[in-house]
Length: 307
Image (cartoon, rainbow, N blue to C red; front, side, top):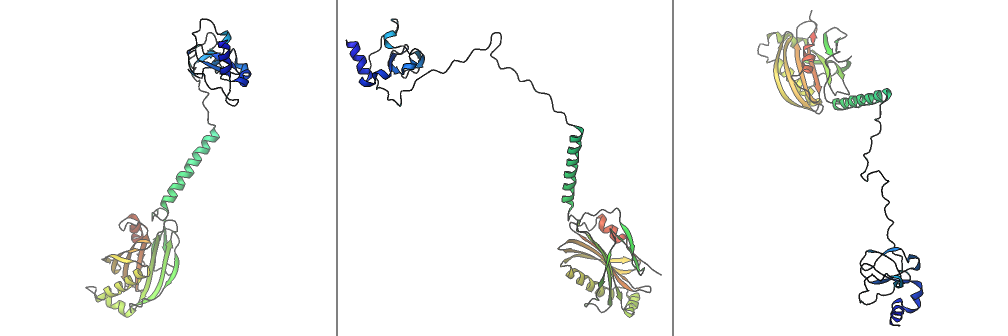
């Protein structure tokens, strides 16, 4: 009678018919499960071990008697979930090992000839685009494929990277010995380089006096006036000047810095012959080396036609 009364008190009166009291075969404590879980393996809420959910009346006599402990609180309808052990993992088939099998690599992909050609063409295009981008406005001008150009009046011949265009040159207001003339120039939009040959007619009377100008007293003011005008028009500053002596007459070498790069010019007073003139031969480019192959080619390719 005491056992029956204890069972009724533990089940909680009216809710006793909704759960089945069971005892853990590991720790001996009591708990309750849903009727559908009776006879299956469940997890003990006390020791968290797996035990058969055997009703208290069917617990084997060999099981240890339940330890005296205060009865647990009855589970509510929301919390009375079946505590079922996860399904066991099936053993590997007979004759096989549980060791993972090595993954056998699939066949290697073969590139078709068309795909190889497409990749090579793409790499070539990328390389060419990179070279073109690095060369833009770099001032590097190939010295191959240049042409000789002779002025329409036959007065001079110059070496240009293309056909030059003629523009008029006004007389220098800073000098009384020049009368104006023309300039032939070629400008490259990609390299940023510009090459030119310009000339101005000299006052004939003043040109004759140059024959007796032993120390350059007459020539220097005319050369300096033209240098100052051209450098100022280019928005630059004079970096270096020097004396130039050639078979055509006295002259000046000028190096200047401009917003478009370094500039190198030769000024030549050619007073002899039927066309006394002041010639200016020059080149300007970003990152220009004043002593590099480009200035040497431009300056060495200039010739004045003498009678």
